[in-house]
Length: 131
Figure 1 (cartoon, rainbow, N blue to C red):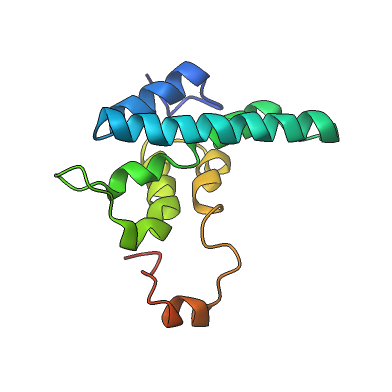
Figure 2: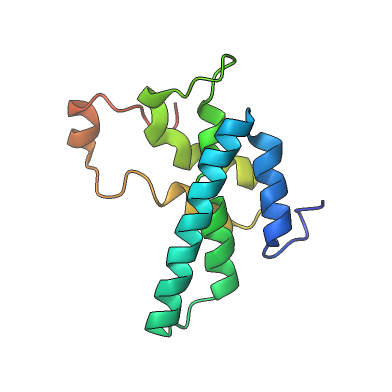
C-alpha cells in the first residue's frame, strides 16, 4: 500500500494498518473495535446533523484516531497506562511518518488532552506531549 499518494484511505487499508501495528490479536480487537464504534457514532451524528463535513474524512479519522495506542504496548504485551494520554501524539507521528495528510493525522492528536491546562499537566504529573 502506498500511503504517500493516498488522500483518504479505504476501510480495508485502515484495517490493514491496525493489523500491522497491533502487537497482539487482543490489542487489535480492543483498539480496532473501539475505533469502529466511534466511527459508527460519528456517522450517526453526521446523518442527524446533515453536516457539510466530508463524511469519508470523518470515517477515516474515526477509524484511525487510536492507532497510537499500539505504541504503548511493551514487549510483554502490557499497556503502559501511565503514558496513555500520549497515544494521540504517538498516532499523529505514526501517520505523519507514513505520509498521511495532516488533516487525517490530526484526528489522533486532537482527541486527547483537550482542555488540559499546563497546571493540570503538572499537578497530575502527566507526561509531556513530546516525551
